[in-house]
Image 1 (cartoon, one colour):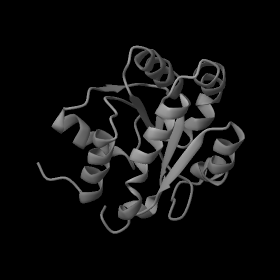
Image 2 (cartoon, rainbow, N blue to C red):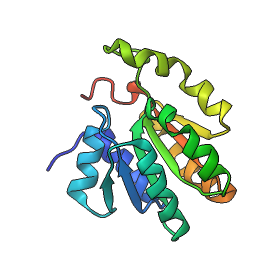
Image 3 (cartoon, rainbow, N blue to C red):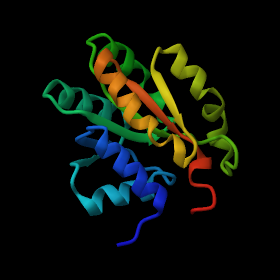
Length: 169
């Protein structure tokens, strides 16, 4: 089955980074990536209904020796703050958040705009290190942030900008 080049490259970067469990909350921007994950089926994938549920499962998996990632929209960051601060950071549990950065350039849904405007500030405020992936050349940042998360035993994030898929979807 053919895949968009970007979704396949994102998958390869995730796999090469050592992520070996993926949890996901539905997201239109991540739909292609989730399809690649499911079709290739090399990395176990658990769909979840809410971000906090994903954080809890990822925390347990991390404590059991896995390297988990939670795929979600940046709006889910707001839903996850308590779990990030009182679970992941308090107990030094590394979890990777791979977030579509909704509510920015080209967004058509007004309800996405508020979180789009504050996501970077919010990540800084809650002390979650992150990398921005906005082009094919910056996909390698996924491997870099996973390494930082492992070394620090802290959660880290990846913001996937809409520009990454520009012209491909």
